[in-house]
Image (tube, rainbow over all chains, first blue to last red; front, side, top):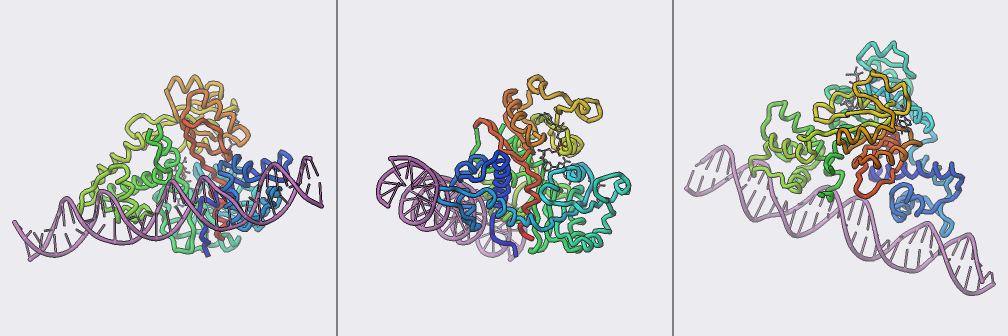
Length: 203
Length: 203
DNA sequence: AAATATTTGTTCTTTTTTTCACAAAAAGAA
DNA sequence: TTCTTTTTGTGAAAAAAAGAACAAATATTT
Ligand SMILES: NC(=O)c1ccc[n+]([C@@H]2O[C@H](COP(=O)([O-])OP(=O)(O)OC[C@H]3O[C@@H](n4cnc5c(N)ncnc54)[C@H](O)[C@@H]3O)[C@@H](O)[C@H]2O)c1
Ligand SMILES: NC(=O)c1ccc[n+]([C@@H]2O[C@H](COP(=O)([O-])OP(=O)(O)OC[C@H]3O[C@@H](n4cnc5c(N)ncnc54)[C@H](O)[C@@H]3O)[C@@H](O)[C@H]2O)c1
């Protein structure tokens, strides 16, 4: 199921997309591997290699058609089907994600939140918030396959297990632990403390 | 300076540290490359290679001393000197970072925040918040070298330039753009939308 | 229409990263 | 002590990623 493309190439594609949208806003219809690479922080060769890897074609001498590139990239990330997510842990990070407007633009919808703290159920968030034991029910209801974990370290694996038993197949994990998941489940880790801390190495 | 280590190896070290602290809490004093690797999601060989690369020694047959490992890792990331940061953009992400307690435990201190919106200046946050034009002054006052950018895409480069002119040398950037910086400045990128979106590739 | 200039697509090369393999060290047993 | 077992430390091998090079294609110019 999980194709053998590296995580880095996937992230580059999303970065290409960001730049392509910029180019489009500036009125361009075509782009060269060199210009796109420069904008996205990659070499022209890498841009072409990446596109070639996914069978994305340009015109020699004419460059790549921006509309076509954007469609191709959107296909890779299933942008045209409904992309639903649930969010567990409505704390600092969880609320930042709920309030972020940019997800809607990209057809990503956080359909529900979950938290142990009952004060989160009444408060007025843009999404409904339920206790964690309702995860299986809501997952079934929406047919959602993707979840975000934004609970404290101590609860990370517990929530992960609950998500797995509910049928979740992809997890974005903000808690600073390695999650134990079966092979057919994909986990992407974001450790904000570590991302900040790596900077101090260079000082 | 020692700039020839890859970003991935640095992140692995921080992950090792997280696991070592766990081991320590469970009462262990020694650890084997195999156990640490298993906990941290790396192979035993990689653990040993990583340590070896930084001149970190264990005892053959006896494994690695956890205290010594933690001290070595803390040295790499200058944990024992004051690690100061400023934060530009007190929005969703910015506030999540301000409210996070875990930074203090690791001797990371967000000393001040900056925002265009005057409603953010009131003393409602754990740190003082100033208008961006006071960045140079505050940077000088604290001698801070590290900054977090959490402003909208459109303001990312403007703020970056201001930080650079104030003498900032390391940036954690949450805005989804490639920053133009001189060679002696290090930028680490966190693109939350992309981190979430890569998941949909695998579905 | 032919010549020219430019850019893609892909193969070949180099570099980087990871894994393998095993000698050397050291703890524990005999 | 000597032998055995386990684990490190590190070169050698393999795999993965990035970079260079260039023929093939195609706009543009002459
Ligand atoms: N906020 C940051 O800047 C930051 C930085 C680095 C790492 N992190 C990590 O991100 C994660 C979230 O951080 P945060 O600052 O948002 O935490 P937080 O404490 O603000 O929020 C956690 C939320 O999870 C809820 N919760 C706790 N246990 C739960 C459970 N079993 N089921 C459902 N909900 C539960 C809590 O009620 C709370 O609302 C943590 O693991 C933290 O270590 C956060
Ligand atoms: N919140 C999320 O979950 C999320 C997800 C993906 C990406 N991002 C990115 O992270 C960045 C921050 O996101 P956010 O949700 O916190 O944004 P936000 O809009 O909530 O906050 C941005 C803050 O920056 C301030 N600001 C704007 N221009 C400024 C300037 N020139 N100088 C100083 N302050 C300025 C605003 O007043 C506001 O307080 C954005 O670039 C966004 O694209 C955020």
